[in-house]
Length: 334
Image 1 (cartoon, rainbow, N blue to C red):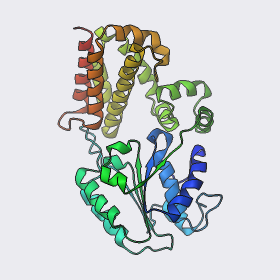
Image 2 (cartoon, helix red, strand yellow; image 1 turned 90 degrees about the vertical axis):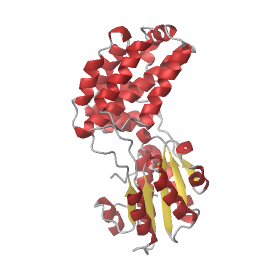
Image 3 (cartoon, rainbow, N blue to C red; image 1 turned 90 degrees about the horizontal axis):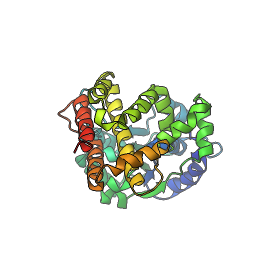
């Protein structure tokens, strides 16, 4: 886990520490995962627990910071979703037994004066019963505790949870900040603009795409999308299947995101708006969109979004992928 703040989060971190340490107990940290929302919340947790903060960041040297680095801090707990075994595409959830264990942990007396901190990342992964259990704790929190809930979509949380947590919105990096940071991560300067464009300006997502080796697959996928009548459905199903257990899910998720971005830009092209992601394919998108009734395009896009948040847990990633891509081909054969 990385507890150092990203460059574009440092001013936010200083302001947020002052608010969190002296005001409410529960906070929604709202921002895109690809901009580093989880890392921002982790850096805030580290600062809250640090015994010797420097320049409004955790010092990295005190016992508390060393415990965090070793994942053995007695006053910190982080809840992450369980994504299953990778054979099927399951909705990543934070299960009730994990939440109950964390709530018992928060009831204990803190080992240090800063108190205890619970980080939930992302809070939208809480199962219904998990969210209800957390809600009860937020209504009557133990003394000297801080609760940090990370989300990119606050509206998907229970209204009662939103009402009991104060909201902090994370700033997005400027293009200059994103480019400078990506260069420092070793991404070739010639590739940065294209990677940021394909990932909606999210630098962490862009670096992950560059390091995964899937950038070339992304470009090949786009070329195939331009030929819907000859789209090689089985090829892309095999590509998803070729990954290891965890990589299958990542490949399926990537493919869904690429396809959702593509169909979103369809609608923008249809409305004579500049595409958000596939700007270099603006003319081709306009031509494709003209061949489809808008209602059909929007219906398919909504189906993709449903699949992102409610995948079929009974089917393999490959079968789900091939089904979606067959539907894509069928749109242009009617």
